[in-house]
Length: 132
Image (cartoon, rainbow, N blue to C red; front, side):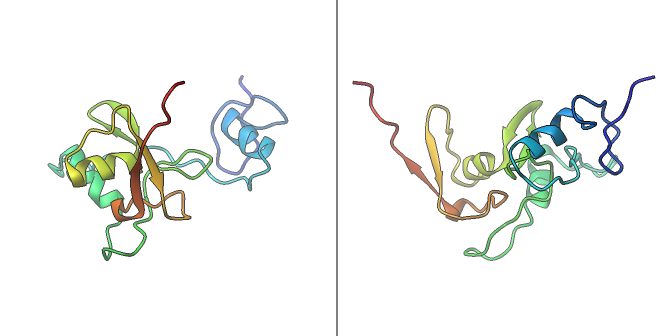
């Protein structure tokens, strides 16, 4: 029988110090141990597309307000989402969908202090440093 993580209600296998890998990383980085949020998917039979469900999880509010991501997050607090079968950062996807612009090879800088904010108005494109 496999030993499980000692964090409340975590069903992942134990790795070190009686914690699963994700909770061990949180502890190692000095972060408060938090429950792991799995990627959420549209309710069965809802008929929602990946894009429609993304905006539900984005918790869209006013233009200048933070839109705090309600889906899965990495331990650092950044939102993650599976879009068309590919795992992506939620804030980058929000920017791409809003401005119909591919961020491939581009750097996106957050203006907002909240890691889980996905409001595209709280981000800006910045130039990548040139190789010398």
